[in-house]
Length: 523
Image 1 (spheres, rainbow, N blue to C red):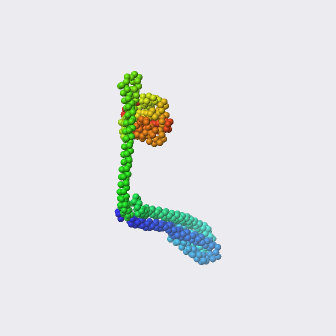
Image 2: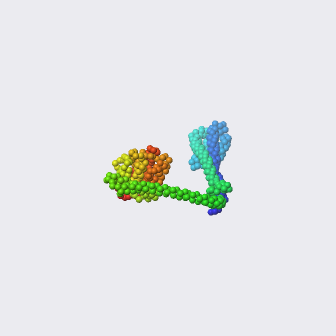
Image 3: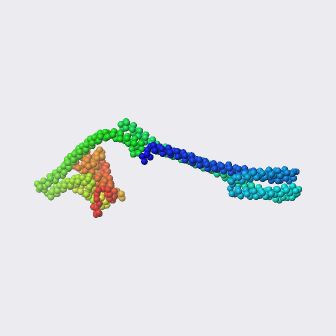
C-alpha cells in the first residue's frame, strides 16, 4: 500500500494511463477507418465492376441486335462477314457475362441475371435459325421469323437486362450513401474519442496539479514562511502516505519545536493577564458588595427609624383615636416598604440564580394591575394613581412575579414623581399581545443612564437622596423576559418617563425554569 501511494507510483500509473489512452484511441480510429475501408472496397470491387459489366452487356447486346437487322439489307448477306461479326460480338458478350458472374451479387440481381441469360439464349437460337434460312435463299421466311419471333425474344432479353441494370444502379447508390454515412459516423466517433481523450488528459493534469504539484508548492511556501519566523502557520497534507507526506511531517516537527518556546512565553503572558483580570473582577465585586451594604443599610434604616419614632410617640404620648390611626398608618406604610425592599432583594437573588419558586397559573391581569395600584395608594396616600384597564384580561403566567414586576414599576413612578402629578397605568389587550404602560411626570432618566438602566444594583445618576436598591428594574426585565415579553422605556430628564411592557397573550412559559402548577385559578 505504501508503494502504491507514493509519488513515483502515481506518476507511473499516470504515464501508463496516457500510454493506454493513446493506444486505445489509435485502435478505435483504426477500427472506424477499417469500417470505412470495407464500404469503399464494396464500391470499388462490387458496384463499379458490376456497372461496367452491365454496361458492356447493354452495348454488346444492342450491337448484336443491330448486326442482326443489318443482314437483311446487306449485299453480302450470304457471305461469311456477318458470321464473323456475330462471332466477335458473341465473344464480347460472353466475356461481359463472365465479368458479371465473377462478382458476388444479391439474390435479386442473380435471379434477374439468370432470367436474362435464358431470354438471351432463346433469342440467340432464333438468330442462328434466321441466318440459316437466309443462307438457304428463303429471305421472305427469314424476314417473317425476324419480325414475329426474333424481335419479341430480343425485347424480352433487353427488358430483363434493363431491370437488372436499374437494380444494380439503385443498389450502387445505396452503397454510396452507406459509404457516406459510414464516413460521417467514423468522423464523429473519432472526433468524440479525441474530445474524450482530451477530457481525460485534462482530468489527469488537474489531478497532478492538485495531488502533487499543488501540495509541493504549498509546502515550499510554508517552509519559506518558517524561514521568515512565521511559526503560526498551518502545514497541510501531514496525513499523506507518500514522499510529500514525509516532507510535510518533517516540516511540522521543525515548526512544533519553534512553537514550543513561543507557546511557553504566551502561556506565561496569558496567566499574568488572567490573574490581572481576576484581580479586577475581585475588586469590582468588593466594590459592589460595599455599595450594596451601604445602600441596604441606608434603605432599611429609613423605614425602621420611621417605625421606631412613631412607636415611641405612641407609647409616651396620650393621643386621640384619629392621631393614633394616622401614626399606625405611617408605621404600616414603613413596614410595607421594608417588606417590598426585602422581597425585591430576595426575588433578585432568585432570578439571578434561575431558580424562582412560584408557579404558573391562569389569572386576571387587569385585577392584578388594580391590586398593584391599590397597594401603592396604601403605601403612598399622597400619590395620585390612575389605572385604565379592561374589566378582565385572562392571562397565563407567574402571578407573583408579575405582581412584583409591576409593583416595582409603579413604586419607581411614585418615588420619582413630583407631588400632585398623576401617575397613569393602562393596559390594552389584543389577540396577540397585552401592552401595559406606566407613565409618570417625574424627574426622568438621563440619556447616559439608558445603557445600564436594567442592570442589577444600578441606580441613575440623578437619584441621589432618594431611597432605592437598584434591583427593581432588573427584576422587571427578568420577569418580562421569562414570560416571552419585552420592556422598553421612553424618558427625558426633568419631564418624566414611560415604561412599556409587551407580553404575548396566553403563551405558557416553555423555556423558563419555572414549574407549571396543574391547578388552574383566577386572580
